[in-house]
Amino acid sequence: MDITQLILDDHHEQRRLFAILEEVDRRDTGVLSAIWGRLAAFLELHAQAEEEIFYPALLQVGIAARRAGPVKDETLDAIHDHNEIRDAVAEVARHQVGSADWYAAVAAANTANSDHMAEEEREGLTDFRRLAGLPRRHQLAVAFAAYEARNYAGVRSVDKDPAGYVRAAEKKTRADGSLSVGTLKRT
Image (cartoon, rainbow, N blue to C red):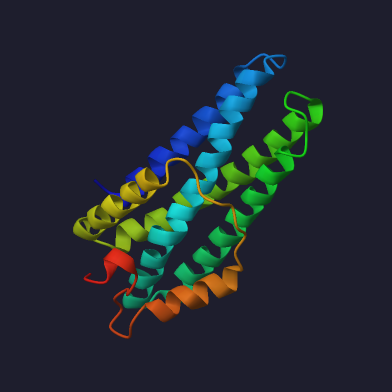
């Protein structure tokens, strides 16, 4: 098991759910609402899992590999993207399910999410595969899967200050390059 693959699997599921929304009859608001509800909750859970597990580890391996600048920039951008996705999801909730405005808001959320996933797949995930060995990626995959399983019913959506997030994550990274968070303290 590899955290980068779990993240890619989540991305595939997000794309699948957005595609399903495009195939449902616009008048079937019950189905649209159910699928959107699942997708909206999943988008937030995925973002939170990345923020709790993946991005601190990306910063950690970047610092250890003397590539702190690039991974810090990637992390700042990712947290900013997560906020944009959260805002787009909140915008969907402001419209009647199945209306033209609702579809436009769903399309905007899809665009924000798709742009983020593509960038993350090109940069953060690629860098992490280069910088972290498979045992570490496996350990993080277990933590990531457990986080999503424990929070399957959803998590509260909260925008984060990207710079504050990175500062806090860097503080948790000790001088020896190890990360002192949660169950990852021993690594």
